[in-house]
View (cartoon, rainbow, N blue to C red):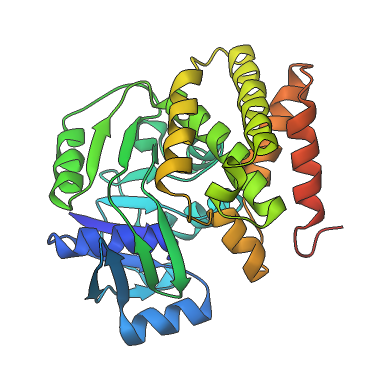
Length: 305
């Protein structure tokens, strides 16, 4: 399969390396000059389960890509979704599918403003990865990828994507209830990413404190209430189990939001906490913990006053 991946961060590099190693034609797209230079020079260094592989993957600006593409995989921050899809409109054909595995809410709807909705897929991944330097990724493939068309329909092409993901050593889970998964991951991220970023602590350090656990539970509870108002099936025990697993098995993990904050980059606060708070306000729902988290995180955003 010919695949273009937009966003050469931790997840973008992990997916690019795995998909390239399994025989797909992969093109990475990014705008950061340091990232472009590093991957062009050294390729991607992917460390999984103690084994390091150097993988050469072509990378460039979106406008430099001219070939037909079967799948565009978007792995940028939610704040860059509109810019990302607009940048690749010239390579989108009637046969091209677009899949977003981004964090936060509303990404598929933004993409569907530029691509026929019947060719837009959405999903989440529970794979964890840390970006140590441009093109240098430490991660694992123990998590899964839940995905489906955003229209709720299905077609024969889905089998091809499923086989490609499985062939890359990734756990592919075609899931017609993926909208619920997206909301549940937003709750997971709102709790863990937000608190780890504010406290400048790894996942385990937040969860081992009683007050930290209480705050996590309150955030998830408020997210569940928002989802209910929107008619979304929200599996609160599943979210709690995912958080407990992260606290137990990924105690040293630094969430991407914290990595961005430490590096002085903009975070995903608007597409995660901001989107949740905005939706709550639209339904006249009080979410005091989320509101406070959002405001505190927003204060720390670079270039925002």
